[in-house]
Image 1: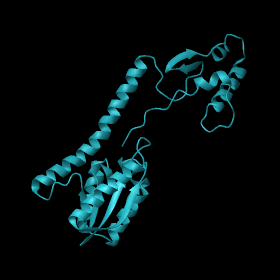
Image 2: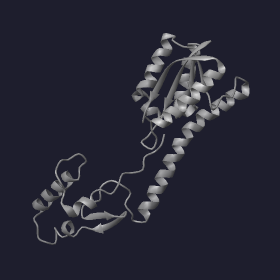
Image 3: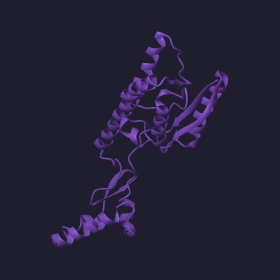
Image 4: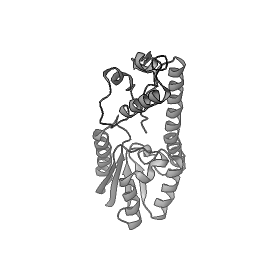
Length: 224
């Protein structure tokens, strides 16, 4: 019986522990059917699979250290995109595991060991990166379209405006400051105080009128 470990990951607040549980269950079922003894489960929660985030994935880094220690023969994952959404990371991991005689198996994408299977596996690596690239492109396209319609794209409203149902509405108090004859220094002081009250985590309570206008909603979160 070969010794195996399981690696699972989910990427954003749109997923949760249930995603990890489902991945682990699929891997355990595969292990039971193929005669693997599961020694440990490594799980990264709410961490992106992008290449820039690899170092911050603590469970993944521990997995790589344990590979070097020769603790197991096989790593089970649900799909290849759980390991990474970066083609370079897949290639580097493949070489590292080959040097240590450790096999990586995606239980939902197990194509075998034929020459054709290698092509399919490499295709899955490329598609995992393509997913992020395409999602980023589509998100930017959506933001541009929203901006073209003069609608709010997220974050804080610009000074002089409130945001209601994603529409910009003039904040009469702020917009009237220059016309009221307020000195530049007083206007600047008001803007700084307003900006401070609108900063996330600031303890001051913003004026009633500004409380609705300075919270225009967060930008969409990519699922990676």
